[in-house]
Image 1 (cartoon, protein in one colour):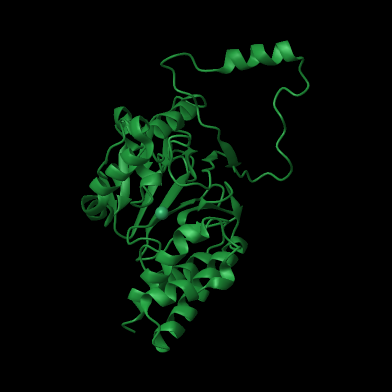
Image 2 (cartoon, rainbow, N blue to C red):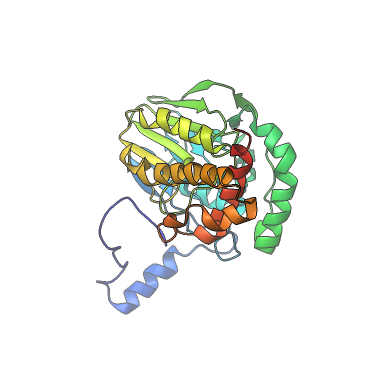
Length: 320
Ligand SMILES: [Zn+2]
């Protein structure tokens, strides 16, 4: 399922055209051999483009295009925000950018270590951009990158070809401002939350706050950094006056901070009920089947990710 920020049912392309004309149009727009198809992008605010990921795990059918990714267009340059989950998705994002502008792709921002956000980076190497990441991203890639690459190859087979670890060339330890010409992006490095290497990006021109996986909408949040840290960061993030937020998974853009509600409820429930389970002497395995069951049915991929969230939270909270 793809989400777009605009309401209403999707229009069927070509529905008013005679069948023969529709076939000709389809034929004309299909990429020829060796040409890369362009990703479909939604312009969520002026010059801010997002491709919505599908709510699935990586597979050959989806090229690991499961996260929201995109780019911001300035008067002088382009900044990619997450190059995608595979080199193929990165190439398709690049084709979509080149379909709109020939301005240089000066920055490729890697919001955090998770593979569905960053394995498209190799597709931008020839543009010679700065690959920008959190100060802890390089260490996280050194620790997990090989494992993530093996998993990607298992999941995609030949579809993983060209995907590789790209080491960041610019590191953010607190804050970094990028000038794209006529607009600035303000990058902030957060403490442990979704992971221990999360970046947020604020576009000053449209007040769009790109949160990547600090914000999950519809799909269950994944705790891979610190549950309590994430709740603390969420307090600060929801105090930011933004028009729009771009979640890592969910619609291409959502109203901020209104859209933080369900994620906060889930994370608070996880903390409260995990603490109660620890206090009651429930084992970690027992907690995984008891904690947070009121959230079942409210999230996509709940069964795939909730038990491991409980396990991670238990390990974090048992030493309080
Ligand atoms: Zn993530």
